[in-house]
Image (cartoon, rainbow, N blue to C red):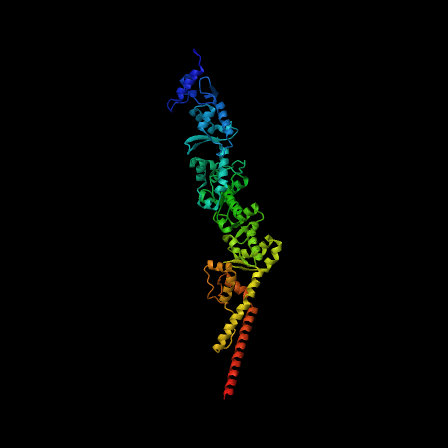
Length: 522
């Protein structure tokens, strides 16, 4: 040219072009081809950039090719690739660090999104719109998807409560990353978990992969593909793709052909592991609420917690569950008292009586101190659907010794009643009333009586004979099971018989004395 093209002139031209209407291209592409042709965007395009540490003056401006500008942008994405948000870099940050105009960065970024496979080592670049900050951002797709996968598998997202009231994975990702639901859906669908390298061999495989990779929960194949393909062919294709690793999931045929994505299975496992680790147990009923079968929960827990024990309706960590029970049982033995084992058991995990019996007879002795083991086995237990009680051997013997004064008191009243009413002595009424026995024991062991009071169980009116299938409370049940013995019955009968004989002899002596006195007066 007749006059040299200085940096100052270039700078002014760049400022004029970028401040013009939105329709106009940046200065670097406003170049006419031979014969006045329209400008072309190709690898020869040039970009202006300024030293980010200096000022955007004519002296600091430089020119670079599209490829150079792309490399600079990729280096920025590499630099921030470890961010928790998936390595997302905002357009404003890129402009500041690259020293380029906003329109130029967008131009380069859009080109990378469409052509990154050839210039970024095969690593795809994506452009997102941040709905919170209302700005565009760029990131490596694999970094962003890794962060998304971490969110979907995180424990904060995987509890029974969250699972039952949770939003869809697409909504979850959109909220967590402040992106649109459409962007979230595309990113989730593109997550390749354990993805193999086999190429698709048919259009059906391509269709199946494209469809099922977007699935985030178990689906019935027939409901998705309908009658467009035979069921046998569809099932065979899905099974083959799963075995090859092309589909990250499993196929089951329990109730039709159901495909379950591995993301869903991993979320289930995280829920189970998190709950079990926090509580020391998990029930099959609870797991059923998130679609887990008994065999699946057994597999999950056994792999993560090999010492767990399988019960009828649950799986428990014996150390976590038995330690508090062993403590209260050992305290009861030390204090010659009783304890409510049920209070230490998770109600939902021990609904079956057989589970509580198994715990008390087989599992708990292992967790107890050797010095208390003999006393534990000598104690007495009441286990049913309502209670699980342990009574120390010393308490049982103490309660049995309390019967003697009660028998003596009752026999006197019973004998007097028979003599005064001239009744034949029968054994039916000779037993000390159950209410008297229960009240006496409840007075000495108030905690035992309190258990029944809390459940609004009244002692009065109860008799020794229990109605079939009826539970009248811990106190009454203990008396019936442990105090109503043949020896107790014999003692009651002997005591009443002895008192009746005594009263008769006394009455007979008074009668003889009265007749003798009358004769003397005559």
